Length: 314
Image (cartoon, rainbow, N blue to C red):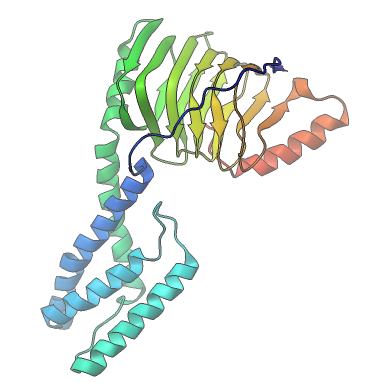
């Protein structure tokens, strides 16, 4: 059931987080880049020197060029881009050729496929360390939720927090001032799930850059008040037998659908802003919203289009 009461009151405009900042996934990519650079200028350089008797200076120059070419193949989120890769490799070969003509010394650009594999391993190891560092706050809050008494209110102080939280008990999370929760992966940022009719309230958060901003499932009763869910692959997914009240939220500018309602879930929407999403504003996959043949057609079409948008599993 979806209810949208008529309301002509102007929406309170929420501004983006102030100041220049990087999202959590961009910070993770910097860790990856750091592992590539440090590994390329140390491990691979000395390996080339020892194994192939290449002068250290030449090996260093060659690996600096190849590391830069490798890094240039990715965007700021760590997504591999083939067009960038071809351009970067072409420039690397051109620079190495010019260096060899000018000095007579060979520079082994890229080091072949093995070099790319080694770069990726070094970068991935660094990224694992970075994820552990960035997720410290999330682990602490997860532990605080686990220790909380049923119905307890947890107030979050202003800041930007990489997060992946699973809430499985009755609790209220309230933002004090500007609190930004950022995704660390393509999974959910906040997941709420329970089979015992737990009651959860989220109030005042800015939730961005995850696979799913808020994922609700099970037999929970959830109240979402004054949250901004933006820049995710999917804004909000409500499924199973969940009952959700969404009041005065902004669910806009997500890559895919703003809100997906599935299963036997029941949702009441009041005074929400749902605009400029890449997919649909509200996608209805719940059986109670359709009848007859419309169930099959609508469900199949919407499920296929959303299957690749985000990981909706807990």
